[in-house]
Length: 548
Image (tube, rainbow, N blue to C red; front, top):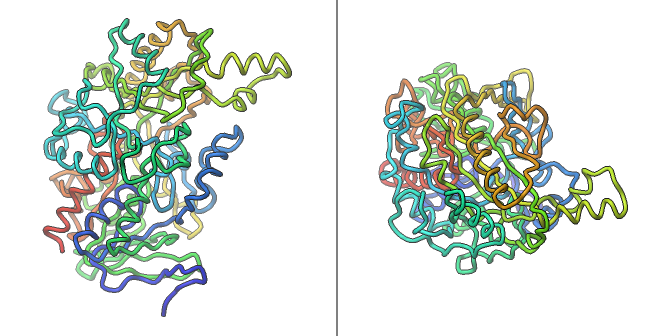
């Protein structure tokens, strides 16, 4: 009997599905579309809702108000999204993830550099970290495919980027006023300021053009920023079925323990359903995928599915953030610098940096600083004095954000906190992480470089901290923690030391694949989403060619 509701939603399983994909974020969306367009019957199970695109202006207004926290913008939080962070380093999950069709790409900044060649060879080159079982060259054609799929702007002639086989699909954005300032300072300090690859439409791709709202992270009201719901829609146009608001509770396997037979999910009405398929792809992200595997324990797999190596949840990584802000006295032209929040990069301390300095990827900002309301909220004055303070800061603020590399370590991991449960009674994920000295060095390298740039411009540095630097004793504007979760289901050729093989198929179950940042062996300092997409396209090819 159909479980269809009055609004047209049908939560019943799809009969005869070839592939069941768990998660409708960037990984699941591109993989689902790739398989559906080749004729496979794909069903996507998504824990969160379909967000109404007409509501994005209201979500932007929520972002611009000084009161709400970031997790409120896309309805994160509450019992559904409970978690623990019991490690030495705070890690606020709900500020950096979205559950819904489109996933975390709904609120990302659309920054899409590739990993560098060295990221795949850290052990061989430097004796630290671990080598991937694939090389940059193996992934290079899939990077190009992913860039074409999502529409990326950039400059193929820019220095400090890995080798390219063809131009970017779109030209780079015009130089902003902050970009011009940073370039001038960089020339004096021998620091190269260049274009950042961005998945934001300049007007010649299959979505709306950028309208310059300048709120890319966390909301793009115009739809000029790529988000994965675009490929979810494309997958549905090719015949895929998407069922939303149905968090998968566990995966079940057959009596021999060699294959997954069904994904068990709950509907908003409290009904339990079981989706069968020939192939299953866990694309629920680097937090929820290890949790799902651990929740799916059985007599054959008492430590969780795909965990014969004992590494599920281990070697977790992220990018601990750092930032530098300053004011340029007498500068007020930055108020007109609207457009994408980021279009500029400093990769020099990523690719051309001794390992003892850590690894950092830097993002000069195009924004004019905090909003006037946010500035006013932080002042004790009123009247003309307050107006003068706001006027002196807004439009004269320059800043650099940065991501730093964290090396994989076994004790950094995601486990189950059985003392706390979500709205379905399941133990919540617990993140235990200490980024380590290498990440601290990367933050300090980036802070020193960014501070020198602002000072070269005649600016006054008013904030220069990382989440791990000695000065960061209290919560700063960036907060504690980090973002870009990676690891926990890492890739490798040895089943005793890894969870998936180079095609993202689990070593233990022949029809279960994992497509997420969790398969990363090292994290680099580049935003991981483009690499996640490239790996997903590679996995889709393998599923199409060998598993169906």
